[in-house]
Image 1 (tube, rainbow, N blue to C red):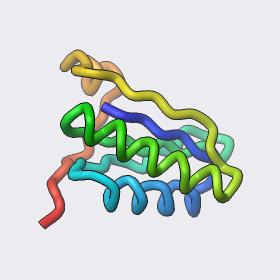
Image 2 (spheres, one colour):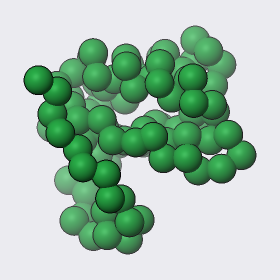
Image 3 (cartoon, rainbow, N blue to C red):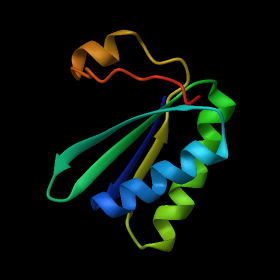
Image 4 (spheres, helix red, strand yellow):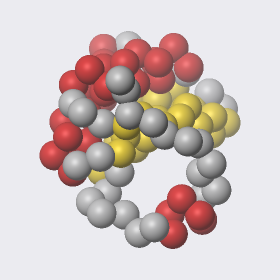
Length: 93
C-alpha cells in the first residue's frame, strides 16, 4: 500500500494520473483529510506501488503541493477496517 498526501484536489488528480500511468496499480481515493489535504492510495505489488508513489510525488512536487508519501509493504488486513476504507477498487481495463 502506498500513500500520497498532497494539498488540493487538482494536485491529487494530477498525482493519481501519474501514479496510474507509471505502474500497474489500483488507485483508491481521493480521501479528503481536511484543511485542503487529500490522500490517494496505491495498491498492488510492492515494486509497482513504490514506482507509482514516486511518480505521483514527482508530479506533486512540480506543483509545489506534496505533503507526504509512504509505502507500506504487506499492510495488515486490519488497516482497511480501522480506517473504514469503503471504496471498491477495480483494476483499469
